[in-house]
Structure formats: C-alpha cells, structure tokens
Amino acid sequence: MSRSKAIIGTTASLIAAFVIEYLLILIAQKGYQVLFEDPNQYLLISLIIIGGFAYYGYIGSALNAKEVLQKITPIALILAIAGILLGWIWEYELLGAILIVVAYFTEAAVAIKLKLDYARYSREWAEIFFWGVLLYVASLPTILLFKEAVAVTFMGNHVKIIGLIPLLYLEIVGKQEVNP
Image: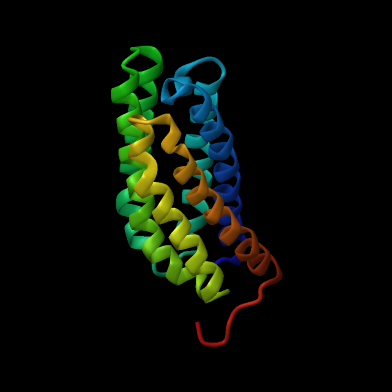
C-alpha cells in the first residue's frame, strides 16, 4: 500500500468536493441548467480530470475498495463524460444532468468500501465521510426537480469534506489506528 498514492486520492477527492460546493451554490441560484453554461462546463470537465487523479491515487492505495474501484469508476467517468457532452454540445441538459447523477451514484458504492480503508486512520472520520457521501448521493436527483433541494445535497457534500480533511491530515502524518 502506498501512502503517497492515498494522499493523492484523498487530495483529489477534497479538491473535487470544493468544486462541487461551488457548483451547488450556482445550482441553488439558477437550477441544474447552469452546469452547461460558460464557463461552468469547464468545471465539469475539471471534475473528470480530478476524478482521474482520485482513481489513480485510490487504485494504488486502497485495500478494500480496489476491486470496486476497478470495476465501477471507469464506467462512472464514461457516464459523466457522456452527460457533459449531451448537456453542453448537444444541449440535452436534462439527459446530460441525469447521466452525471447516475455517474455519481457509483460514488456511494465506492464509499462503502473506501470507508474501510479510511478506518485505518480513524473510524470516526471515516464514518463522517461515508455518511456525507451517502447524503450527497441520495439527495442529488432531487436537485433536478427542485433547485431548493440543493441545500440537502450541499449539506451532504459538506459533511464529506468535514470527514476528508482530518483523514488527509492523518494520511500525511502517517498516523494509523492500531486496530481499525
């Protein structure tokens, strides 16, 4: 297991979460269609690139999540790219947004196993990360119907960030629990 790759994966996830926070604020103001306006579609593309870094980091460091990452993440990235193309280039914004939401559902499947990997550093922060991901992903489809529902999605993403920050710190200093 590579600690440096774990740091890359967690850092990429944290950066993506901050980009998502910004996009959620825009969605709260204007609805999901704002994702496909200039320059926001470039932020979606940056999330794909950041996702590639997260995949690289986690695949080289995850013990429990490695198999599910290998099977699910490439599919999720392809779905997200298709969603961006549909919404931005072909202007099928709802279909594009739906594909992006479906791609993010894979995050919940990965988080179930990733929680076990993060528990090596802290069970508590791993649980906070996990529940943040689940709240974020479970509430994501509602913002396609009601932009006001973004508050719950924002809260889930924020809880995920609250869990990731101390986990990243613990990865950097190399502190692991004795019996995770």
